Every structure is written in C-alpha cells, then in structure tokens.
Image (cartoon, rainbow, N blue to C red; front, top):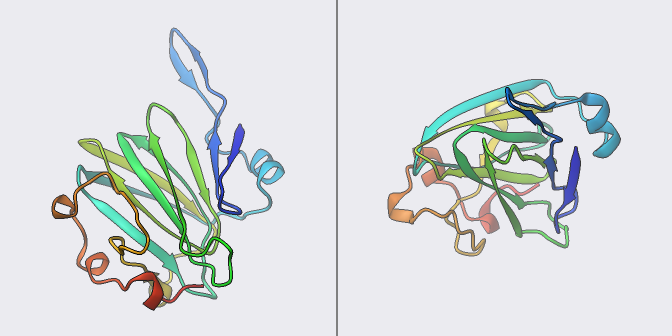
Length: 181
C-alpha cells in the first residue's frame, strides 16, 4: 500500500498494491498491521455501506465530541467524488477541503481523521460506498456543514439544481455557524 499525503494534516489517500492476471485481480483492502505502520493506531468498530444513484450528494457529516469519528472510505462500484473539510478550530487549514475521485477502477481509499467533515457526490449511474469508522454512530452527536456553503468553494461536479439531497443535508448550517470541532 502506498500512502499519498495531502496538504491537510492527517488526511491521506491510500493506493493498494493490486495483483492482476488472466483471472482478474486481488488486493488487501485492509490490513490492521500495515495501516498502523503507515498511518498510526486506529481501532475501527463499525463498517457501513450505502448505494446511491447519480446526483446524490451525501454530507458534509461529522460527529461532535466526545464521539468524533475517523473514517476509511472507498467506492466498490461506480465513481464518487469524495470530499473532506478541515473543521478543527485553530487548525492552519481550517475550512479548507480536499477532493479525490474514488472508483471501482482505481481502488483508492481515503483516510479521514477526526476533525474533518466528510461527504461525497455520485458521478456514475450508481455507486456503492463503503466505510470503516472508529466510533459508533451516536444520533445525539450527529452534525454537519452545509455542503453548498459558498465559503467552502467545493465543486461537487454536479450542478446544485441537479443534486439529490436529504432534507437534513439541505438544512445544515454554513461552516461559520456549524459546531466545528
């Protein structure tokens, strides 16, 4: 596995080593030993999966303390544009975001440490998205940032009028009014 550092401290893209032959391919999608050697100790406690159609945008989600979450995400079918926004008050990159395309073809994974809001837009007809979390979901800690907040300057690769959003995501607050960590 190769680790690609981003400009946002702690946020990394992981490129697995893929073995291909006439039968297809094989790769380790997760190895606790390798992950901890390259990234550091993280104890994942919950795996989630979603399936969405083109135009769905989910995010920008996070959990408030004491239930903050780190996530390891990937797209196993289709293509998504994955986004993480630094919401760590006092961070030199507060409010900045990083985007990476994850797909069944590139097999990339994205590690999002605690202190980031996370979301993705579906760029293919459908997409299956999987993620590991190091904290269980706590409804009372559920929070988010308005994904169309102009101050963030995120290009979701889908026009706002074509976005399919949940009511909750549509009503989120801009980053300046959100419960940043």
